[in-house]
Length: 481
Image 1 (cartoon, rainbow, N blue to C red):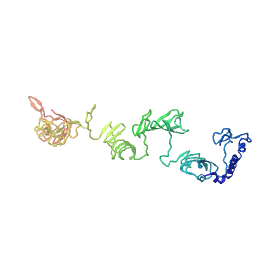
Image 2 (cartoon, one colour):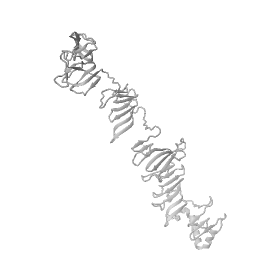
Image 3 (cartoon, one colour):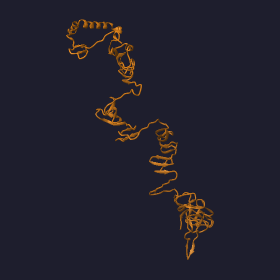
């Protein structure tokens, strides 16, 4: 593309040819016009070979214009696309001018062209992609700067067509970007994102920008670990402990079923740790991938759970514990249980003892002479082999239970089957075995040299309740002797 093809510049070209002819044909006259002062006293000097100076006697380049006032400069005027044209080997490579249409610059353009132009209130800098797709745009209307777009919609608008087209801020040990809100409170105005020593860090600067109000608001390292309040995160999410209380807050709408943390394995929920608002109680729960809760700290009205923490009390299998530890069920300990007092609901102490018989509670038993460490139901009166009474629910039971064992109470208070057909039983009477299987009866004293005594080794205990006649059960204070 040449200027000769632009009709709007025909007058300028005619003048240029006239000046060139004057230099070639009349060199002395041509030089004279450059050395004659103008009306303001400025002198234009032709200096050296093929160098022209305007306002200077020593032009260092082909054309040098020395500007000494706002009115000085170079003016390119015309009615159609006035411009400067930059050429290589006669081929136009770039333009600087004012255009009325983009197509005015398309003539002769090729990949690799650089075009610097203004149009429609915007300043365009274009490369490679050709006319109409600018690399840099400065919009006159909203003052926005566009990179890769001709219509910036923000103060800075970067349009990326691929991952390679991005925004990079680099520096030795600290490429950074600052975000400032001048209306924020003291030491809360300037947040800074920066790359520093292998870390990507978000910090809060103080108002003087000389140091940091909070250095490690958020830190990410090359291992993919995220730190909050720590510069050295050692796990995928690491919350550092500061001078004030450190919290993780998870918000949810009122009445929502769950809000909390979920631990997954291969995408499947395995544990949930958080809040359960499904029943309107906003209980804290720890549950497995099933619907059963392992831990629940709850408000009144929630369903019973495995473990409950409520007002400093722990309940296992019970909804509203009234003691520090309350268990609805059995307790098994492989170690020692130590305490000042054991308060049992039932008042007898029993032992697990093997037996070939399955006997009901209240049955009086004696030693089985045919086996070692076994018992049988009593069958004769005043049996010195009496061993105790079968207990239904002992307050304390010793030994290890089993299908072939019975709970035999040897001390404390327990219900005992008794036979009053041979004599009424009164409170305080001593009881012994009877001829009725598994039943006790009142002991009758014997005269031993004028001394009335009960037969040693036969006593089961003392009756705490009376039975006037027949058979039944009475509460007995066991005291084998």
